[in-house]
Image (cartoon, rainbow, N blue to C red; front, top):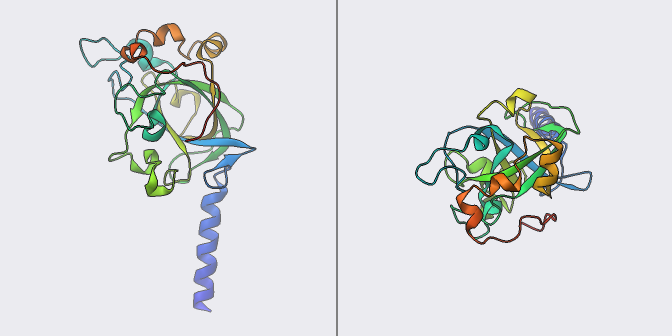
Length: 213
């Protein structure tokens, strides 16, 4: 009987953890869309896409206060580069699912969409491994089951200030200029053109398919 009770407790614990995450499967999906985990940060550096003056390591003002993000290593660059990754300057629309990773965030209403430009890297090193290691360690997704993680810049409280506490989201690649016209907090391609990595000959930034990771 003792073992039965323990088994039931374990099952209840597992269920309660997964119940807070609306995305399911491996990697996680929600209503047919790919899912991403999110966190937020601020470190004042220009980041791995070079979005700051060339003479130092400071950010451009818009790179601190706009909707920008650091992408997990495998998405930032499939070749594991740490500078000027292939997806620098790409815009990703995040839509909240209403879910979150237990103990790592809190509930946010479902259906809220915001678009973030990738201007930095979330490297697969301490203390980021649980979120940003989408390689072989976890079978192509991070510890929590997501194929993509975005660490959202919160330098001007633009993320926490709208009530986002590390929400679970779906994601899709979109056109930055279209999103900038809808919400000026999403950087335009004109702003991206100020970044050092905008001149490194990467592939076109207007692609709008998720592709496969």
